[in-house]
Length: 92
Image (cartoon, rainbow, N blue to C red):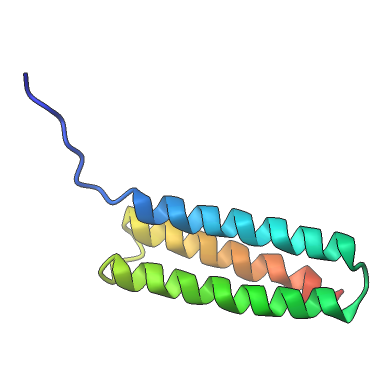
């Protein structure tokens, strides 16, 4: 019996999108716990810097793939979501 093996890297985009979801959840929790406070903004800034650093690491680990590939698209989508997700927290 022949086995089908997919050589596509699916782990990288799943990890990137999971990072985006975690980032959104923590930002939402921080803004709910500390509404209209500077602490929520600082949490958002620090967490965004860490999330973007992790995305950079995922991109380097994937071998600097093209943005049009599946891992590249997952990383790009997660990066855009993380950046747009922090804007309301900073603007207030």
